[in-house]
Length: 153
Image (tube, rainbow, N blue to C red):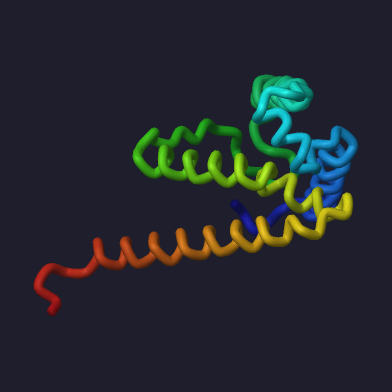
């Protein structure tokens, strides 16, 4: 990303986060028990919320590149960033799914859950931060081992 972002970039990012959090709170998706009821197939409201979000973002991803060459606030060109489907994607997805199933909350909704008064979600947030730190630590050390010259011992 470029350093010459539009002056409204950070304020609009903040407003977008507030809107997202309000939407999660209003739809009750910031309450872990609602998500756990969905995972037990007792409450099917979550797929409707996700479907609505997918429609809005899908329209945005389809329309904006046709009417603009670059993102309005960052100036970055619109482009597809395809990433390989590999072992890391599978392992990361499995860890995310297990964490989501155990806590009933995903990382974005965890912050919104604090806003609706769920202070016990701090345990899940601590686990997310610890997991992210450990993954970064592991990845930086595995890259360092890959770049070490053979026979440097």
